[in-house]
Image (cartoon, rainbow, N blue to C red; front, side):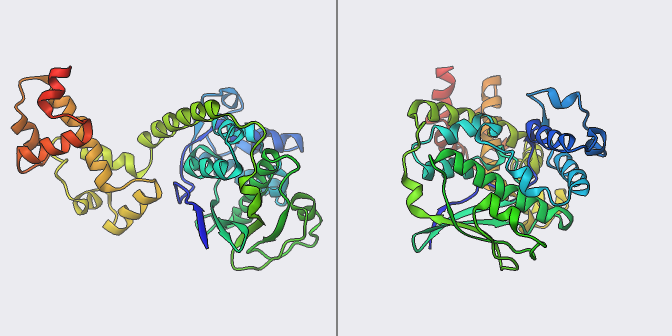
Length: 341
């Protein structure tokens, strides 16, 4: 088995563009469900849905999903078909302008927290077939099936849009038991799935991965990826466990803290802290380095703070260790950095 790409996150709790929530509300209202009922308990308003720059938390969108699933319990597949490449904004344009579907898949997994997914996908190649596996283990039980069906239908819809003529599936397995009828599954996926399987997996021929995409453009995809990096960096800096760790480490006396100290302050075990940070695509060491770099720059540019004092405040036993770390961050020594400014 060859792992094609790893998802950058492993948990659904990340902020999202409000466009995804807007799509859910439009879908429901088009089928007679009042918007107030769909937004109940989310803290969102119909007026707020019209702000294209707004973001929602995963739990706010999940509340809307629950309301929609309660009103239309078997609508997961139909909702999924409403998601198109352009639904994903700049990430979608990165898909469209990628050289091949292999590249588009890599972009999708690299910036998965710019999507609207709750299921976590992974992609591997086995015996000439691509296996798109949907991890639903962390989904709330009451909406797990609805979300898996929505997410897999959305992925299949976008892939079909990217490749002229579409990508026929060779098989679909669901962990869930069958419905009374599989007609809608046949319509969406082009075949009858297997149910009650060990995992939810969609399969297609690996040859499709390297087919050139018709709207490939190296300049456009580079520009889109740059914007994706900026957006995802901003979101990750504001939210999640990584944000809480940064806040703790940013106190001048906290940058020398050990992971066990931070975990204790956050009320979690060291193992849980490590796993949560891995899920967010980072590590304690990386965050400690990041905070030290920012504080070092702030302290040095204030002036009148000797390098030895900066090193001590940042938790280094010797100035030479700090200078070595600073050169790794900035490419120059602290004194050369200050001369350059």
